[in-house]
Image (cartoon, rainbow, N blue to C red):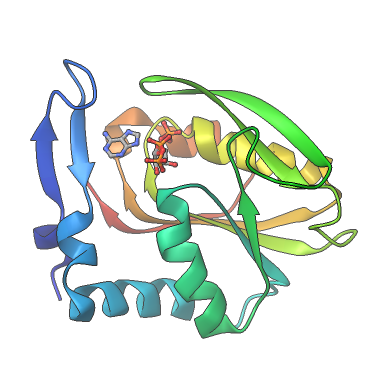
Length: 170
Ligand SMILES: O=P(O)(O)OC[C@H]1O[C@H](OP(=O)(O)OP(=O)(O)O)[C@H](O)[C@@H]1O
Ligand SMILES: Nc1ncnc2[nH]cnc12
């Protein structure tokens, strides 16, 4: 299945000069969505993974079905003020702004191998922050998985030292 055909390019969103990769056509097609999740999950089926974590919001769309498919705990990494219990926090820069992620202090068991999942790897700022947050919380990064990698933004270089896997490159 050609997953690329389910990604729509939207120029100048959310700011002039940004070519936004819209995954909603893929989400709208259950066969393509299921195929993408199954392919991502299959890549980690035999690797040591104790839990799956993702940053809101689009990361959840792939992390949740992967967690169910791999029968692993799901750990939400959320924007500030959303998690009700005590949190660890990490601030980071995006392709089009800055942000912060938080995780509950008891979400990650000591030395747990945490697989991080997101829809898009752009500059790598979000995933680098997610990795730091997992480590700050006592876990280890088992890998970083993406539906789509925007190779020209060289996010993979920002994630040097972490094992990265993407299903589609463009
Ligand atoms: O590699 P980066 O440059 O960090 O960009 C990738 C991140 O940007 C998007 O999230 P966004 O912050 O737009 O939030 P959303 O998931 O709530 O739409 C996307 O879902 C990734 O998390
Ligand atoms: N160009 C882009 N398209 C979709 N999501 C993104 N997240 C960061 N950059 C993005």
